[in-house]
Length: 100
Picture (cartoon, rainbow, N blue to C red):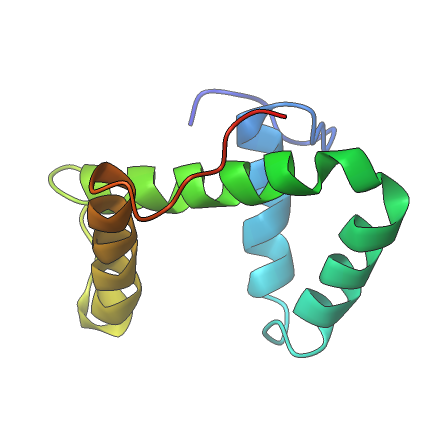
């Protein structure tokens, strides 16, 4: 990562990634998913599909890119396998989240 993340600029992919890893590394995510989901469902109703599409795209890319030099370890194998299955579902047309 070549960006300076000290200013917590979450408007960049690197800054958002930095903040997500900080949040998930601070005593886990218990209760945080519920709060974020509630916020996203109430703050900007027309962006819900775009947000879900973005999350799916991130997970699909994680599944595609999980090879040298971006490898993982045994603790994360299930997550990466899930991302790969999600990518297969997307490729097979089982997931459709068009721009609306």
